[in-house]
Length: 257
Length: 111
Image (cartoon, rainbow over all chains, first blue to last red; front, side, top):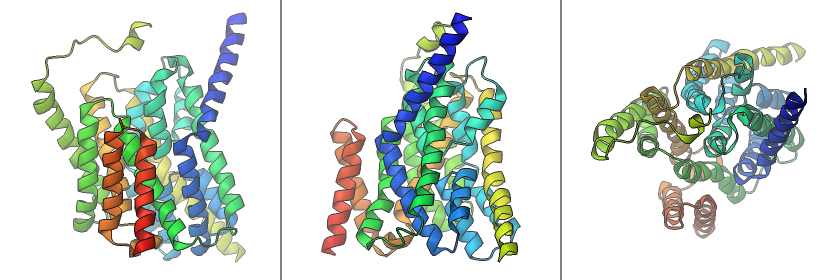
């Protein structure tokens, strides 16, 4: 079938287009973070193979830091599991919020489950910024091209850099550490397409550290659910009420289908 | 040590892979049922953004490693100035990164 042949080529084309995203600023910043992670893993007594395996299996950097932190402290398996689980609850709304943009009617669930493994903050921001510019039926290929490549490249970086960079000069280490949060501040604000996201942004920034002082174990969960819900309520009942009602017709891309 | 070796992989699989991917899979199942224009999706977006920014802002306020010894005002000042420059420059992300990191490095060198 000529049409399925061109479909396949097109899928490959979008996969490769997504791959090229690893040369973007956010991907390069994340790579510097993983160079830092390989030094952290070495200092914490994790072997090279374990550090690479962890990068592929867990992927999210904060979860890995917590996992290593509890392992290095000699915590029992159940305690490590609980700590990582609590830190990873955020994955659920992150993945859920990009699913409506990523899938199409024919996307098999197994594919979406597989691709969700590669969701972490950088690929989440990438999805929010770029998925809407890609034809809907090519979005899974495009996202996979970026996110899978990003994971594999960073696993490679951990394997290669482990042992080479035992310790950076303090100023370089500090600047590298600061790159990731600073980048997220800019890119997440810039990619906000809804007023509710900007409100939630401010809530998270203020409430994250505030709850860390009150309840260090659950701070991010409280800040996320509490701050996010508050942002939603303020947006719905204060901000959107002031604006003239938006026409109920859905966005252009649905109109094409 | 070989006994210790395989146990570490069990820990990584159970406490690492399982503990993170369970939430990702639940996210797929929930996200599959959300309409692109629904109020529920607006709320999920808000919660996701607040969670991510809570993690991000904690990295600046309570950093680990070398930055833990630097003054809070320097980190917040560098980030704040960078973010302001970012807003004034028409939201160019590179401006945010370059201004913040430059100010941080200048601060670390002069302190």
